Length: 108
Image 1 (cartoon, rainbow, N blue to C red):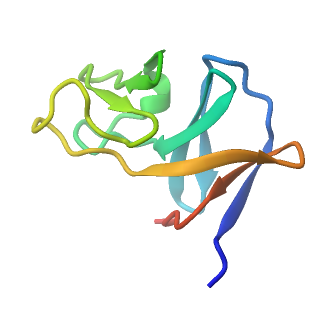
Image 2 (cartoon, rainbow, N blue to C red):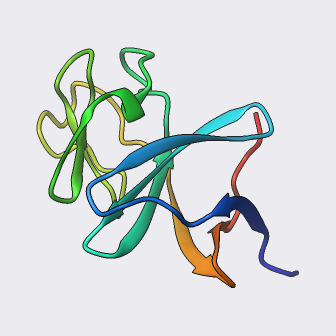
């Protein structure tokens, strides 16, 4: 079975920036940290807020609604485990100048 590759457009995020992208009906957060692209499900599973409206603190995105931080590599809740679930994390990379999410990203 081939690995799914979802092109998102030109790779034009600067270090320390993040943005929300639509994949089907799903919103993905893409962040650039130290030259690497990272991706999480953008909707906080606890507060229902867009994480892309929060802030980056090194390799952690902090939810704008309840201040819980999620590791961008694993999606793990790193500030208050047990308060809310981890976020789904996905692999993001550059291919031919385009930002691509790789793997099984549900579109719902």
